[in-house]
Image (cartoon, rainbow, N blue to C red; front, side):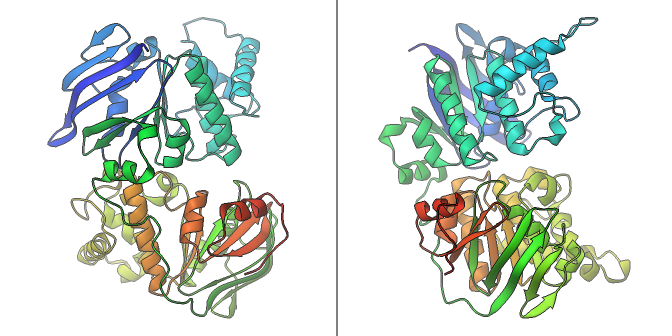
Length: 500
């Protein structure tokens, strides 16, 4: 098979930080080659070298028959390299068709744009990826999964020979994931080489031919996927055995902390939800994207207040009309979008952690720097946040450590109920194991946890009970230990409500 891309002994440093310490990697024609590693292993830097965003300090790149010491973004595109990033890079105020048109054809001064041709091409590419998105719709009106599909359509339309996919399914529904898998297989069949990056190992086994593992900036091996099992793959990534991704429950749940009865919110489309969460219990919330899981969390946190039903905390009826009232009642919410609502990347860790407790920490409006630093140091130690200190900016941390900072902010409020929305989305398997351990430890200490996740193995492995949402209401509450088929059947409406 023809080699499309070859990197030999690539090295890259940023000041004293050696991001790549000698990485070798190759991609064959008609191959899906997975690139794995923990957050901070060097995957993002390697992608930026391949796409021309970073010039390597040492090493050789070969694209097709052309040997280079470095690339520029324009040269990479000209050589047929396209990258689909985890965070879509689209123009929010332009339409879908205009965004696709800009990617496919370099605009020239005084040239006439054929709107009809632009729209026709966009429709063709959107259909190819199975996206039912109006081409005239503004990108700002699209959901994150829809933006991801537009990015994929752009890459297909560019006629790329090498396609890099960075966590492409992180925000896709199960249906959209299956469509994407079909697109990847079509690309492979047409001779395109795909570099596929994902923390979801089941995707690697389903799609990839080979896998290269990075650890601490070095390539530690390239293997045929058929020669590895999940345990071997994890060990290659983290350099050690991971005892368990899903630590077992310890102890029995206590008294009921949260009780909602026939809860409704017309604005959110949530209706007639009745559910309990007890102290020391993890209730996992499953369901398809759009089923109402996040909408329920936002109601409980007062972002979109309920307009019907009842909320009781420790047996007391309460009305939660705003996040401030939710925090006062002992409710904490770690949202799904870590970059937009979780961690302010430019702020130090200490400022990020203290944000929800300013009235307590800074009484009388006096800034108390030592108190803030001590609070940050406590959570850095307790949650094992890997950073050079409380003054480190949030953006300098890996995804898993950013998530720990986000959790720390709300733990600082000393909540009774912790709502976690996609707590391990986009984090590597080692960080995922640590976050699961932290969640289980919090439950063991008596915290009531409501955990929303699109990762079905996570829901099955972590939940004491499983609440399944469908079309804005509760389809079933299942006991811990239920199998995937039972949960999916409830999510698809193939069974009646069953309360555990």
